[in-house]
Amino acid sequence: MSGAQTEPLPGAAAASASSHWGIVGGGMLGMTLALRLSEQGKRVTLIEAAPQVGGLASAWQLGDVTWDRHYHVTLLSDTALRKLLDELGLDEEIEWTETRTGVFAGGKLHSVSNTLELLRFPVLNTVNIARLGATILSAARRTDWQQLEQIPVADWLIRWSGKRAFERFWLPLLRSKLGEAYTQTSAAFIWSTIQRLYAARRSGMKREMFGSVRGGYARVLETFSHRLRDKGVRMLLDAPVSVVGPAPGGVEVSLRDGRQLQFDHVVVTAAAPAAARACQGLTEDEQTRLAGVCYLGIVCASVLLKRPLDGYYVTNLLDAGLPFTGVIEMSAMVHPRQFNGCGLVYLPRYLAPDDPFFEQSDDEVRRVFMQGLQRVYPSIGDADVLAFRVSRVRHVMPLPTIGYSTRLPPEDTSVAGLHLVNSAHIVNGTLNVNETVQLAERAAQRFAAWK
Image 1 (cartoon, rainbow, N blue to C red):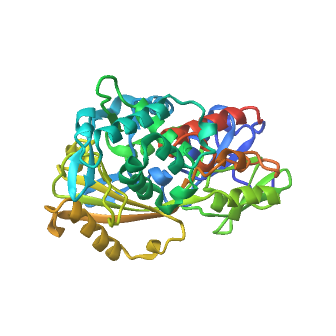
Image 2 (cartoon, helix red, strand yellow):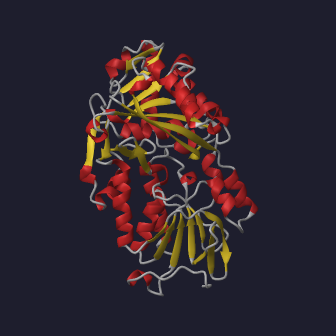
Image 3 (cartoon, rainbow, N blue to C red):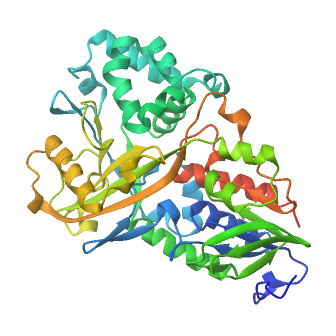
């Protein structure tokens, strides 16, 4: 160790015989890894660029309400996340709600929250709806996602649902979530989406039961941080990393403020493009695989309203020309008392990382998004808005392109002690907190063999 090494931690976890692990990235992935590695007796330092932990799950202030910066939901089937929340004493704090789903089509809102409402959906006829149901059932029952990974999502949906249902139902949804990148995306995308949602539904009319911890992720992250500190994890916040590279006897992490930290092992949880920029000593093939991961970014507005909207947790948008990809009403899932009786709405827009919309000012985003919201909900005026904040993240979701799993970046790199574990390694699921926790759990089990 050089003179720039991290000072030893107190207690048994800092025993000289234990290896010292650095984790770059303090989101739910990095935090879960830190917890599990500390439980293995390793010394752990968690390094986060932001002033607070949480990453995409972080919380912020919206008027006089503190809530999640992006929208998150817990499903009954999210076993990995619920196990972690149970360890933190929070699983019993989840409030479960039967949610409703809306669709904006033909300039009107329609409820499609159950089978009967879907049958009355005017955009599709009975044959279209029957084929739509067969498509969803087929995806829910399939297990061979590797085969679907070789088929473009549009081809598979047209084959199962028909051209009319694809053009009037699936295509607007794909464009709202993926933009024109849907043409690069495999059928494994729709398979994983349906798999998660179908698993969350109960029998009979397949009612959706979604949940959220009272207090949101602000409470989850505060409780999680206390647990990590109790386990002896050192947390460096507001500490952006500039370079991660090989050093004598281990791996060195250089911070932008000039500090240099040395570890036996370092796990980089940042998105693939950031990992490629920061990590030195990787082979050309490793750099190529990192650069080959295509991402979607997001511009997401959080809107605090004087009152809730119409009670649809998700409103899917089939009409063209709207500036966001959907309307997510958190106050339709979380009791409005947690928002002081107000309504909380998210307006997400998924787009390519280099899309010029990222450069739009908050005022311009508000102007454009409010025009769109008033098109869906004409009764909402500017006077109804109590707070409006904009989050921008350029690398959120790796695109499951054709043959994606065959081109994954390595988790254990050619640099001794340097490991990469990030959302790019979620190969048969959708990006959500449960999948992130599962990824961390699998990596921690593998790292248990590293002393």
